[in-house]
Image (cartoon, rainbow, N blue to C red; front, side, top):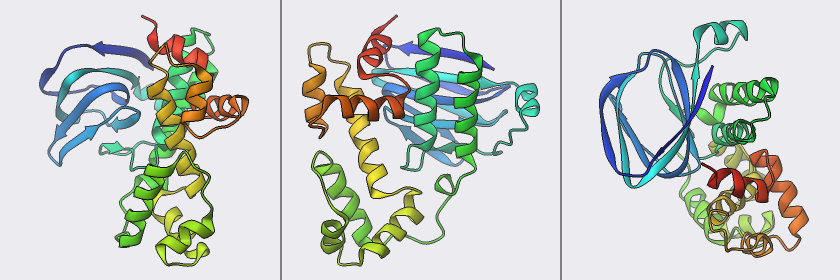
Length: 249
């Protein structure tokens, strides 16, 4: 298993190529896209993608550059840990399940803790996520109200919303709303909102002048200690340490 961080400050086009090893890529900043026989996958910050060994694709770094964390997986590593991986590329399908485990692996990698077990555990979380229902194509299209509900959550994630309020807006029963949300994204509305808040916090933490208490408030947390606990659970490090690690090097 090889872990590396790539910082590409300028836009560039990568010619078509293949990778000898299967690998995971976590996009930490900037604009990045991959194109293969099935089309182009736009990878915004705080997303992740898996590519199997031998896949042929091109890559493109956008105008803002890109920072990528990559994990190359030896066949012996996968065999030893009895990890099965798909034979096709898999990107996060809105849930971020692959990404959050990847971010925790990145935090451990940057901390230089030397704890191989911790890093391997997070990598295996990422591999396990590849086989979960939320990373597979849905057999049934989402209803129109579901897309509108996601738009509402993305707009109002800082506020404390209730299932009853969301269900009333959608015109469905709260139980039905929860069932459809789980079937489409593999998580609850509460999980979705928490991840939106932490994603926003990751962006804001790049600004060293933005106080942590102000970031907590901006993301919808009245209590900074509560914000720190939620952030550490998702990212594997505290907001303060994330700011230092992300700006390092």
